[in-house]
Length: 42
Image 1 (cartoon, rainbow, N blue to C red):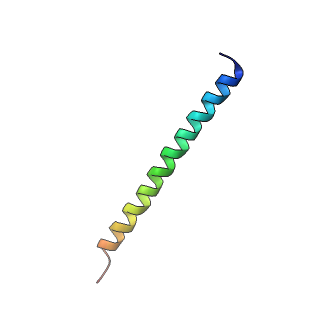
Image 2: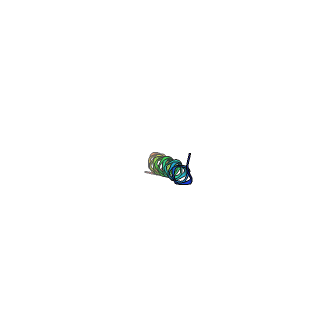
Image 3: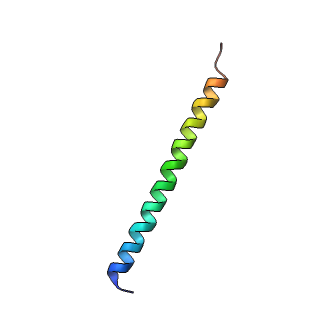
């Protein structure tokens, strides 16, 4: 395995990690919005 292949593989893994983290962060934010909306005083 060459250095270029290793670098590409590391880049792909980093991108997957960032996408998964961003998706979960966005889902958590939406969940908080729904939670706050349900428990707001009406």
